[in-house]
Length: 258
Image 1: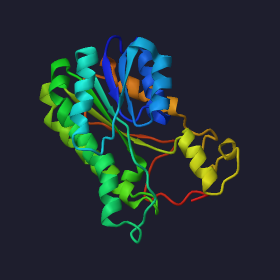
Image 2 (image 1 turned 90 degrees about the vertical axis):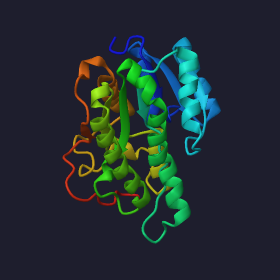
Image 3 (image 1 turned 90 degrees about the horizontal axis):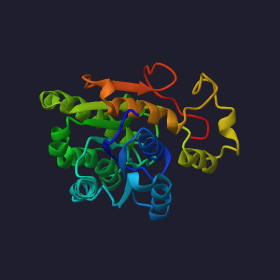
């Protein structure tokens, strides 16, 4: 087991990529703090995971939420070995539709919250020589045309990851950043249906977006996350890893249905 008796917080883990990470971590022997805002989904997940998990419901856009999250982990499990900043708010916007309110809302969840969570977690992570994984997006490079605010936040998250990896290397706290590409989560499937694609669209994705013919699954991201949380990935820190099916060069065009 790669994560035996390690305590891991995964934000946004009641669905999608976060849920897959939580399940994979427990399978590898970890104790996990499941975080989200949906009580019914959270309860279902921790019932599946059993005593190796605890549920913490909170809105991380609240500046006081990060300290509550870390306190919940320490209270339940007594230590903290890993943090996965996965929670994100995805809102379609371009220059014309991005106003101050929308921008602040996206930044609060997608960039400020990871910073404040790491700030609250850094001392417990120093005590265990822990690992931080920041889940970003390939939109950090240029971004899709209607993902302006989201892309800006994900670009900032890359800089946060590299800065903290440099600062805390001497404290043996490692920081790894994933720029995740197109992943077939339940929410992504429903979103594309709402935008005009037909049922079963993911069975035959556009080869220009999915050259292998098979969309990346949440569990694929979870497998990478487990490795970089584990001691097997020591002493590497500061890596920015593109989890996509092709080299990311230049801009990201609109996908069918956008």
